[in-house]
Amino acid sequence: MKYWHIFLAFFIPGILGYGGGPASIPLVENEVVRRYEWMSVQEFSEMLALANSLPGPIATKLAGYIGYVEGGPLGAVIGVFAAVAPSLIIMILLLGVLYKYKDSPKVQRLTLYVRPVIAILLGVMAWRFFQTSYEGIGLWQVLLITISSFLLIERMRIHPAIVIGITLVYGAFLL
Image (cartoon, rainbow, N blue to C red; front, side, top):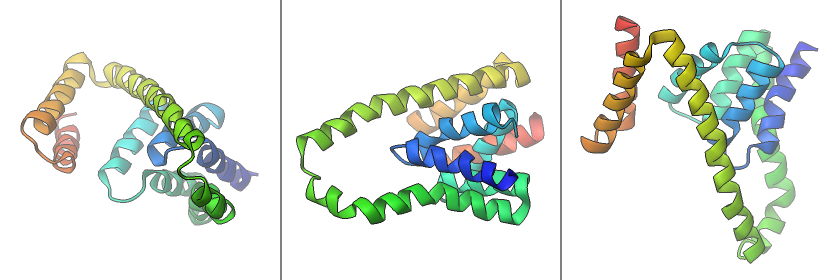
């Protein structure tokens, strides 16, 4: 039953997460934190931060790590397969149809309507992470990291990967 739950925890967000990995992160969080209670919000946010600092698709990194923690190597394989299976199935079945109607105004309007929903889901998740961070390390640390990251990326034009590395080192040594 554990492997079936791992499969569902990543297959369902894969189906509903229109827009790729970032769109499915709040859905994965819901499954992992609220539905199956495999992690706390704090643990999920720390794992997400680490996964974002590594190269590759975020959804598969989450699925592989959580699957491994919950079900060992087989759990990791099942999690990664479940994360990529919806896209794989849809691509195989609907590639011809999508190619035929790609310029349709209805398809373009659908994409236009989905973007704000994704933005709201990511905003809600970011707010939860902020609240958890605030409770864990305090307001001043959260503000320092947030403002410093913003200034480094937006004003000084430092690559986000370098800023992520700096914040990881800061957190490892000072928090």
